Image (cartoon, rainbow, N blue to C red; front, side, top):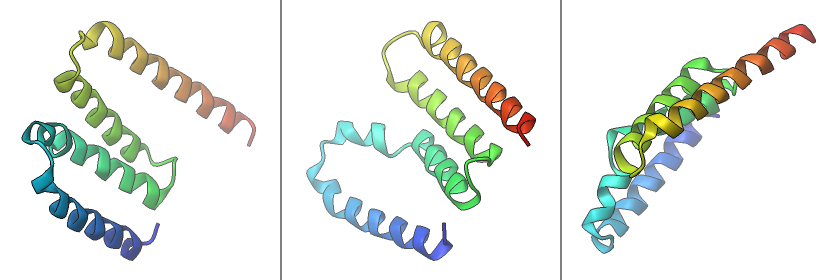
Amino acid sequence: MNNKLFFGIALIIAGLSSLIIPFLPQSLFKYIFNWQVMMIIVGIYLILKKGVNNVAGIWIISIGVYFYIKEFLPFEYNRIVLPILLIIIGVGFIALYFKDKNK
C-alpha cells in the first residue's frame, strides 16, 4: 500500500473520530483508544505495506490481540486464548512448510 494512501486514510479516520468523540460514551474509549489497538493498527500497516509474509506485522498484531483479549474480555484467557494461539501458530508453520516444499 502506498504511504500517501495510508496516511490519507489515517488522517480521515482521525478527523472522523474527533468529530464523533463527543457523542460516544466515556466507557467506550477504553476499548478503542488504547495501546493494544495501536499495536494492531501498526501491524496491519506493516502487512499492507510489505505483504502477508511480513512476520513482524503478524507478530505485532498477535501481541496486540493477545493483550487486548487479556485486558478486556472477562474469561480466563490462559485456558482458551493461549491454546488457540498455539494452534494458529502451528497451522501457520505447517502452511509455510508446504509453501516452501512446492517451490
